[in-house]
Length: 589
Image: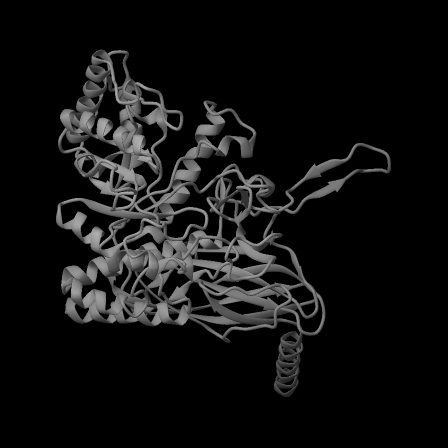
């Protein structure tokens, strides 16, 4: 009897071994880091194991590429285990999110694009609908009998099942959130993929958790526009309850990626006809919850409509605000600032005065508006999206009106930035479209043919990670982007902002979740890399606090000496980030 059992056991062992070997010929799994891309028809690249490192309270991402070398396969299930760590600790798999990378078309290249037209992985279709907590079911149509009514269920975009044709591949994206309260050390688990026909494969996963913790909210200040354009993507009215729920989900997604969400209008105090405020208790409580749960570090005070001046169409009275409206506007700013101060929020606030004042008359407008705000509340900061030098020698000096300067990346000038910072102002930076340095740049002949890291799909992913490194290099403390949800030709098929050229993914970091059955956003790979750059800045802040700016900047210099000379090699970022972590750990002891 014992001999029979032994033989049976050996047979099963041999069959399992043969089955594993057979499956290995049908499915391959390789790992990529978060800054790499792979096309569907590209030869398989990557490593045979996942090895990532993270601070506590950080999200670190990686990719698993599923290949089908021998025959077409249909993947039906993907799962990541709990990650076992020191002394029985673990990173629960509930902290790990899985996505299937969807492909979008770049039909016409963005100006000066480094990469050609084609299909690019960018939208991240979640395995689990974040609203319902259930898997997204595939679209199906059924009828009991021929000719009878058809019942439709499911959605066009879903994570599994998916086919991988022979010789092709499909990449998966994985976010690992490392909790604050776990011990530092090495955590191990695996990612396993199942396909029809009893095919499966697995790839080992190792996460090294460093013994320091990132802040909850972003240290690097930022402003990324509003969600006013979202309503059209979901076919809802702007003031409807449906829109408010969708808007809040977009705000949550921004916060999860270390970007300050815009405060929904219906959470702010009511403005009366005389410029005074009415604090509605329900709104106030909702705003406190918003600020706390989304870890908002910086936010815009809406401009007073009593002081609204003509914008692009200037009239002879653009410098004039009536005495009655001036009084109302100043009352508005005074009461708003006092409301913020009563809640400990006043240091986070700023007034976004004007965007790109590209006329001499616009400069005069800035002076009028800035004087009005500062007379009412001297401590309230005024932000203007403009470079730190004048466009023309005869233009007025707007320095008295501006507290936060925000030049385009290609308009950056180190000397005048240092002068503004030395004078007590802040400097942020921003990008839009594809704009090189203007003729009035102080160093025009040196920089006129150089390109900063423009933000588009048909560029290396590192361009989304590097701006916080370059900002630190220049002492720039904030990042601004004009939109994350601008109008594009077709969100899921041709996400290009046409102006009239194509700017692929320009002003567009979130895909509407409609084809997935999600009443909220679907994130892009580009947004994940932007988040990683924001997390890198947390490392800068921690190390500078423990050592000094010089020590931190020496490491930053290896990635980004200036706006026109920066690394596009993913491994460079990982090496520099590890060096930052090692310095932090050494100084923490």
